[in-house]
Image (cartoon, rainbow, N blue to C red; front, side, top):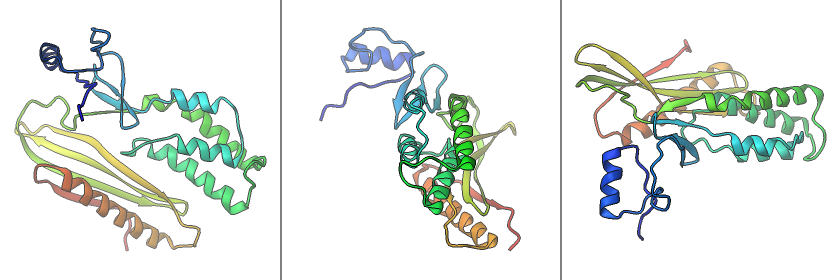
Amino acid sequence: MLLRKWRSNSKQLNLLWQQEGVKTESSETGAIDLRLPTKVLGLAWDPENDLIYFDPKDLLKFMSRRGESKRFILSVVGRIFDPIGILGPLVIKLKSLLQELWTLGVEWDSELPPKLRHKWQQWSSEAEGLTEIKIPRFYLGNINQEISKCEIHCFSDASKSAYGTILYLRFVTCNNEIETSFICSKSRVAPLKSLTLPRLELTAALLSARLAKQVSSCLKFDVNICYWTDSLI
């Protein structure tokens, strides 16, 4: 299979591709515009600033239908593809809302109860600001110095309604400059079966350990892993 439609924010690489006749996204137009975003695994990539973000344009267009039913909300959840969890705090609210709808036995196309309708409307208004959430594509940022120390810090927490974890890469340069960058996060809605808060904290810590193991296995360098939790158990 011939791979084509390559995209890079390197001017030198783009020039080399043109000379070699490699098929890129700009081959048909003949112009390379780094300001235009491109899709990467369901997320948008800003090549000029090298940032990854979620483009809610299609989602907001779908939500403009102003549906307020369990079926419509489930459709909205299905349209959000967030593989690394940059939208975790917002998505978990929607999943918790769906769980409440299931618990109350609301029919697929019935009107939402007033309290849950208010939560849905509040979430819909917050969705317009999704483009404000942006992360650097490259973990090491603009650091050009040699790195002397590299760590992954994993924070986990839980509540009665949800639990989750978030991972950051922390690195120290030879000049003792410290930088951190977001790696990924995961969140889960708490099960309907009543669990104690210490048990949920432990579940969050387990999620944190599993995610850290998965991330560290993908890295091509050794890294120390630190786990953080506010649980005193």
